[in-house]
Length: 249
Ligand SMILES: Nc1ncnc2c1ncn2[C@@H]1O[C@H](COP(=O)(O)OP(=O)(O)OP(=O)(O)O)[C@@H](O)[C@H]1O
Ligand SMILES: [Mg+2]
Image (tube, rainbow, N blue to C red; front, side, top):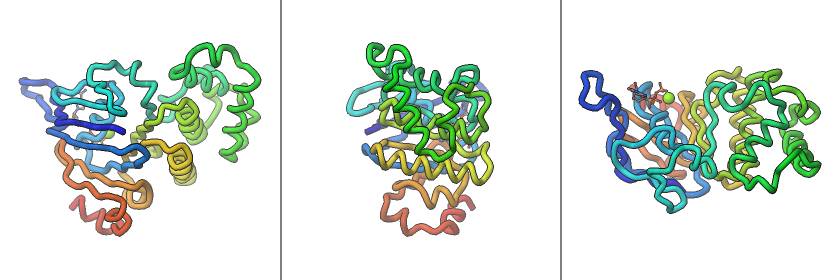
Protein backbone atom coordinates (compact mmCIF):
# COMPACT_ATOMS: atom_id res chain seq x y z
CA UNK A 1 0.00 0.00 0.00
CA UNK A 2 1.22 3.48 -0.88
CA UNK A 3 -0.18 6.64 0.71
CA UNK A 4 0.71 10.13 -0.47
CA UNK A 5 -0.38 12.82 1.93
CA UNK A 6 -0.62 16.40 0.69
CA UNK A 7 2.46 16.02 -1.53
CA UNK A 8 3.89 19.04 -3.33
CA UNK A 9 7.10 19.30 -5.34
CA UNK A 10 8.56 22.61 -6.46
CA UNK A 11 11.69 22.76 -8.60
CA UNK A 12 13.90 25.89 -8.56
CA UNK A 13 11.92 27.41 -5.71
CA UNK A 14 11.76 31.20 -5.78
CA UNK A 15 13.66 31.44 -9.05
CA UNK A 16 12.45 32.68 -12.39
CA UNK A 17 12.25 29.10 -13.68
CA UNK A 18 10.25 27.81 -10.69
CA UNK A 19 8.07 24.79 -11.56
CA UNK A 20 5.26 23.48 -9.38
CA UNK A 21 5.59 19.89 -10.60
CA UNK A 22 3.13 18.45 -8.08
CA UNK A 23 0.50 20.32 -6.10
CA UNK A 24 -1.18 18.94 -2.96
CA UNK A 25 -1.47 15.35 -4.10
CA UNK A 26 -3.48 12.99 -1.90
CA UNK A 27 -3.47 9.43 -3.14
CA UNK A 28 -4.06 6.04 -1.57
CA UNK A 29 -2.99 3.06 -3.64
CA UNK A 30 -4.25 -0.18 -2.16
CA UNK A 31 -2.11 -3.30 -2.07
CA UNK A 32 -2.61 -5.32 -5.24
CA UNK A 33 -3.94 -2.46 -7.30
CA UNK A 34 -2.62 -1.73 -10.77
CA UNK A 35 -2.82 1.99 -11.30
CA UNK A 36 -2.40 3.39 -14.78
CA UNK A 37 -1.25 7.02 -15.03
CA UNK A 38 -1.87 9.26 -18.04
CA UNK A 39 -1.28 12.97 -18.60
CA UNK A 40 0.39 15.39 -20.98
CA UNK A 41 4.14 15.96 -21.11
CA UNK A 42 5.34 17.78 -18.04
CA UNK A 43 2.20 17.11 -16.00
CA UNK A 44 4.13 15.54 -13.10
CA UNK A 45 3.85 11.79 -13.69
CA UNK A 46 7.54 10.90 -13.51
CA UNK A 47 8.03 13.28 -10.58
CA UNK A 48 5.40 11.30 -8.68
CA UNK A 49 7.26 8.03 -9.31
CA UNK A 50 10.55 9.69 -8.34
CA UNK A 51 9.04 10.73 -5.02
CA UNK A 52 7.72 7.24 -4.30
CA UNK A 53 11.04 5.56 -5.14
CA UNK A 54 12.99 8.18 -3.19
CA UNK A 55 14.93 9.51 -6.20
CA UNK A 56 13.45 12.94 -5.34
CA UNK A 57 12.22 14.39 -2.05
CA UNK A 58 8.88 16.17 -1.75
CA UNK A 59 8.92 19.90 -1.00
CA UNK A 60 6.11 19.19 1.46
CA UNK A 61 3.89 16.29 2.44
CA UNK A 62 4.45 12.72 3.53
CA UNK A 63 4.81 9.33 1.86
CA UNK A 64 3.86 6.05 3.51
CA UNK A 65 4.68 2.59 2.21
CA UNK A 66 2.84 -0.27 3.89
CA UNK A 67 1.98 2.08 6.75
CA UNK A 68 5.59 3.20 7.37
CA UNK A 69 6.49 6.85 6.91
CA UNK A 70 9.33 6.66 4.36
CA UNK A 71 9.44 10.41 3.64
CA UNK A 72 13.00 10.70 4.88
CA UNK A 73 14.24 7.26 3.76
CA UNK A 74 16.82 7.44 0.96
CA UNK A 75 16.26 5.62 -2.32
CA UNK A 76 18.57 2.71 -1.51
CA UNK A 77 16.64 2.00 1.70
CA UNK A 78 13.31 2.03 -0.16
CA UNK A 79 14.54 -0.47 -2.73
CA UNK A 80 13.46 -3.34 -0.52
CA UNK A 81 9.88 -2.26 -1.23
CA UNK A 82 10.08 -0.56 -4.60
CA UNK A 83 11.40 -1.58 -8.02
CA UNK A 84 11.31 0.53 -11.17
CA UNK A 85 11.25 -0.18 -14.85
CA UNK A 86 12.21 2.73 -17.08
CA UNK A 87 11.52 3.73 -20.66
CA UNK A 88 15.09 2.96 -21.64
CA UNK A 89 15.68 -0.81 -21.45
CA UNK A 90 19.35 -0.15 -20.73
CA UNK A 91 18.68 1.66 -17.46
CA UNK A 92 17.40 -1.35 -15.53
CA UNK A 93 20.25 -3.81 -15.93
CA UNK A 94 24.06 -3.94 -16.15
CA UNK A 95 25.24 -4.59 -19.73
CA UNK A 96 28.62 -6.06 -18.87
CA UNK A 97 27.31 -8.60 -16.40
CA UNK A 98 25.72 -11.90 -17.38
CA UNK A 99 21.98 -12.43 -17.13
CA UNK A 100 22.53 -14.65 -14.10
CA UNK A 101 24.70 -12.04 -12.35
CA UNK A 102 22.07 -9.40 -13.00
CA UNK A 103 19.52 -11.63 -11.26
CA UNK A 104 21.93 -12.11 -8.37
CA UNK A 105 22.38 -8.37 -8.03
CA UNK A 106 18.64 -7.83 -8.04
CA UNK A 107 18.22 -10.46 -5.34
CA UNK A 108 21.00 -8.92 -3.25
CA UNK A 109 19.17 -5.59 -3.17
CA UNK A 110 16.43 -6.96 -0.99
CA UNK A 111 17.44 -10.25 0.57
CA UNK A 112 19.87 -11.05 3.35
CA UNK A 113 23.28 -11.91 1.97
CA UNK A 114 23.50 -15.31 3.60
CA UNK A 115 20.57 -16.55 1.51
CA UNK A 116 22.18 -15.97 -1.82
CA UNK A 117 25.96 -15.85 -1.56
CA UNK A 118 27.46 -17.39 -4.68
CA UNK A 119 25.54 -18.84 -7.58
CA UNK A 120 24.20 -21.90 -5.86
CA UNK A 121 22.38 -24.51 -7.92
CA UNK A 122 18.98 -23.74 -6.39
CA UNK A 123 19.20 -20.05 -7.25
CA UNK A 124 20.35 -20.82 -10.77
CA UNK A 125 17.48 -23.23 -11.27
CA UNK A 126 14.96 -20.72 -9.92
CA UNK A 127 16.24 -18.09 -12.35
CA UNK A 128 16.21 -20.51 -15.29
CA UNK A 129 12.69 -21.75 -14.54
CA UNK A 130 11.42 -18.20 -14.21
CA UNK A 131 13.06 -17.10 -17.46
CA UNK A 132 11.75 -20.19 -19.27
CA UNK A 133 8.19 -19.07 -18.47
CA UNK A 134 8.74 -16.07 -20.72
CA UNK A 135 8.85 -18.39 -23.72
CA UNK A 136 11.66 -16.34 -25.29
CA UNK A 137 14.31 -19.06 -25.17
CA UNK A 138 16.51 -16.97 -22.89
CA UNK A 139 16.88 -19.68 -20.22
CA UNK A 140 19.79 -21.16 -22.16
CA UNK A 141 21.57 -17.81 -22.35
CA UNK A 142 21.96 -16.99 -18.66
CA UNK A 143 25.73 -16.88 -18.96
CA UNK A 144 25.68 -14.33 -21.77
CA UNK A 145 26.19 -10.64 -21.03
CA UNK A 146 22.96 -8.68 -20.65
CA UNK A 147 24.31 -6.28 -23.28
CA UNK A 148 23.90 -8.93 -25.98
CA UNK A 149 20.09 -8.89 -25.68
CA UNK A 150 17.51 -6.71 -27.42
CA UNK A 151 15.66 -3.93 -25.63
CA UNK A 152 12.48 -6.00 -25.41
CA UNK A 153 14.33 -8.99 -23.98
CA UNK A 154 16.00 -6.75 -21.40
CA UNK A 155 12.71 -5.19 -20.34
CA UNK A 156 11.21 -8.65 -19.93
CA UNK A 157 14.12 -9.72 -17.71
CA UNK A 158 14.00 -6.48 -15.71
CA UNK A 159 10.36 -7.21 -14.97
CA UNK A 160 11.16 -10.74 -13.88
CA UNK A 161 13.90 -9.54 -11.56
CA UNK A 162 11.55 -7.11 -9.91
CA UNK A 163 9.18 -9.95 -9.20
CA UNK A 164 11.83 -12.36 -7.94
CA UNK A 165 13.22 -9.89 -5.42
CA UNK A 166 9.94 -9.69 -3.46
CA UNK A 167 9.81 -5.91 -3.36
CA UNK A 168 6.03 -5.82 -3.80
CA UNK A 169 5.75 -2.43 -5.48
CA UNK A 170 6.44 -2.07 -9.19
CA UNK A 171 6.77 1.37 -10.81
CA UNK A 172 6.76 1.41 -14.61
CA UNK A 173 7.58 4.66 -16.41
CA UNK A 174 6.61 4.28 -20.07
CA UNK A 175 8.15 0.77 -20.13
CA UNK A 176 7.23 0.12 -23.74
CA UNK A 177 7.99 3.53 -25.29
CA UNK A 178 11.26 2.33 -26.81
CA UNK A 179 9.97 -1.03 -28.02
CA UNK A 180 8.46 -2.28 -31.28
CA UNK A 181 4.73 -3.14 -31.14
CA UNK A 182 5.26 -6.86 -30.69
CA UNK A 183 7.78 -6.46 -27.86
CA UNK A 184 5.59 -3.78 -26.28
CA UNK A 185 2.66 -6.16 -26.24
CA UNK A 186 4.79 -8.90 -24.75
CA UNK A 187 6.00 -6.62 -21.95
CA UNK A 188 2.51 -5.38 -21.10
CA UNK A 189 1.06 -8.89 -21.08
CA UNK A 190 3.96 -10.05 -18.94
CA UNK A 191 3.52 -7.14 -16.50
CA UNK A 192 -0.17 -7.91 -16.25
CA UNK A 193 0.45 -11.58 -15.55
CA UNK A 194 3.19 -10.95 -12.98
CA UNK A 195 1.23 -8.25 -11.17
CA UNK A 196 -1.72 -10.63 -10.78
CA UNK A 197 0.36 -13.72 -10.04
CA UNK A 198 2.44 -12.06 -7.33
CA UNK A 199 -0.20 -9.63 -6.03
CA UNK A 200 2.07 -6.65 -6.74
CA UNK A 201 1.04 -3.06 -6.21
CA UNK A 202 1.82 -1.43 -9.55
CA UNK A 203 1.83 1.99 -11.19
CA UNK A 204 2.33 2.34 -14.90
CA UNK A 205 2.76 5.61 -16.78
CA UNK A 206 1.81 5.49 -20.44
CA UNK A 207 1.04 7.77 -23.37
CA UNK A 208 -0.61 4.90 -25.21
CA UNK A 209 -4.31 5.42 -24.52
CA UNK A 210 -5.31 2.04 -25.90
CA UNK A 211 -3.00 0.39 -23.37
CA UNK A 212 -4.30 2.71 -20.64
CA UNK A 213 -7.83 1.62 -21.40
CA UNK A 214 -7.00 -2.07 -21.56
CA UNK A 215 -4.63 -2.59 -18.63
CA UNK A 216 -4.86 -1.93 -14.90
CA UNK A 217 -7.74 -1.60 -12.49
CA UNK A 218 -7.59 2.12 -11.77
CA UNK A 219 -6.82 5.08 -14.00
CA UNK A 220 -5.71 8.58 -13.05
CA UNK A 221 -4.98 11.61 -15.18
CA UNK A 222 -2.46 14.30 -14.29
CA UNK A 223 -2.64 17.87 -15.46
CA UNK A 224 -0.46 20.71 -14.24
CA UNK A 225 0.77 18.72 -11.24
CA UNK A 226 -2.71 17.74 -10.09
CA UNK A 227 -4.83 14.63 -10.37
CA UNK A 228 -7.84 15.72 -12.37
CA UNK A 229 -9.41 12.31 -12.96
CA UNK A 230 -9.48 9.14 -10.88
CA UNK A 231 -11.48 6.16 -12.12
CA UNK A 232 -11.97 2.98 -10.11
CA UNK A 233 -12.14 -0.45 -11.70
CA UNK A 234 -15.85 -0.28 -12.41
CA UNK A 235 -15.73 3.15 -14.06
CA UNK A 236 -12.55 2.27 -15.92
CA UNK A 237 -14.07 -0.90 -17.35
CA UNK A 238 -16.83 1.19 -18.95
CA UNK A 239 -14.43 3.75 -20.42
CA UNK A 240 -13.87 3.64 -24.18
CA UNK A 241 -10.62 4.62 -25.89
CA UNK A 242 -12.48 7.45 -27.63
CA UNK A 243 -13.68 8.86 -24.31
CA UNK A 244 -10.14 8.65 -23.04
CA UNK A 245 -8.82 10.47 -26.11
CA UNK A 246 -11.32 13.23 -25.34
CA UNK A 247 -9.71 13.73 -21.92
CA UNK A 248 -6.84 15.36 -23.80
CA UNK A 249 -8.87 17.79 -25.92
N1 LIG B 1 15.01 17.92 -11.89
C1 LIG B 1 14.17 18.85 -12.35
N2 LIG B 1 14.51 20.18 -12.30
C2 LIG B 1 13.68 21.14 -12.75
N3 LIG B 1 12.45 20.88 -13.24
C3 LIG B 1 12.06 19.60 -13.31
C4 LIG B 1 12.89 18.52 -12.87
N4 LIG B 1 12.22 17.36 -13.07
C5 LIG B 1 11.05 17.69 -13.61
N5 LIG B 1 10.92 19.03 -13.75
C6 LIG B 1 9.76 19.76 -14.28
O1 LIG B 1 8.61 19.32 -13.56
C7 LIG B 1 7.50 19.19 -14.44
C8 LIG B 1 6.97 17.76 -14.38
O2 LIG B 1 7.93 16.91 -14.98
P1 LIG B 1 7.72 15.34 -15.11
O3 LIG B 1 8.98 14.76 -15.60
O4 LIG B 1 7.17 14.81 -13.82
O5 LIG B 1 6.58 15.25 -16.22
P2 LIG B 1 5.92 13.97 -16.94
O6 LIG B 1 4.45 14.06 -16.67
O7 LIG B 1 6.61 12.74 -16.53
O8 LIG B 1 6.17 14.30 -18.48
P3 LIG B 1 6.51 13.32 -19.73
O9 LIG B 1 5.20 12.77 -20.17
O10 LIG B 1 7.09 14.25 -20.73
O11 LIG B 1 7.46 12.28 -19.26
C9 LIG B 1 7.99 19.61 -15.82
O12 LIG B 1 7.66 20.96 -16.02
C10 LIG B 1 9.48 19.42 -15.73
O13 LIG B 1 10.17 20.29 -16.59
MG1 LIG C 1 7.78 11.33 -17.57
